[in-house]
Image 1 (cartoon, rainbow, N blue to C red):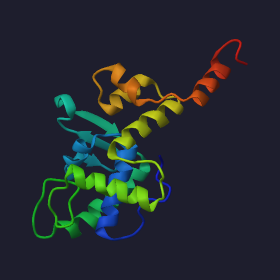
Image 2 (image 1 turned 60 degrees about the vertical axis):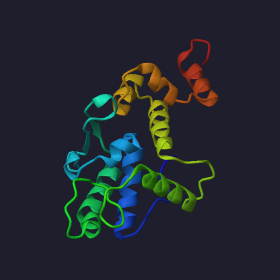
Image 3 (image 1 turned 120 degrees about the vertical axis):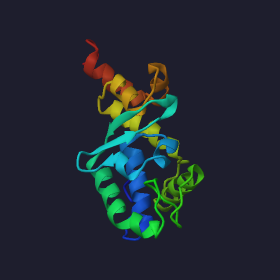
Image 4 (image 1 turned 30 degrees about the vertical axis):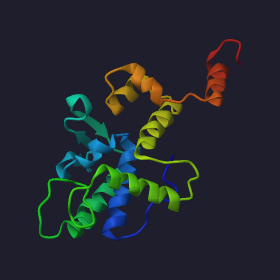
Length: 181
């Protein structure tokens, strides 16, 4: 589910929303992990994101795409200060009045932009985790690499996220099976 017609604009909220969507799609992090990020948890020059105390109390480093790093940097330098106002906040992603962003608000942001992009399917924050896993698998990423990215303790959990489609299986048979050529 790539962001084809995602948020464009210079307002603080549009910059925030773009950074949220790009981060979710680049990393596949859980919405709870996203809202717990602090400004220093994302290194846009190194293109890495640090999840601290994710599910299972695990920390992990996750690479960012160039698009996500640019979106976060644009938000952090131009959008966040406008939302922050005079109050300090430990959170990277802020609500309209500078407070902490909540899970439901992120869900509303995702749904609103999916609607604006005329996406027909139901889209949620969790859709991004499935999309990341599916797209990486299609791009021939190793399932264990996807497991590490998503922060799964068990490989069977990762396998549930990767929807294998019939067309994918046909291509594998044609490419890898001795009689498939």
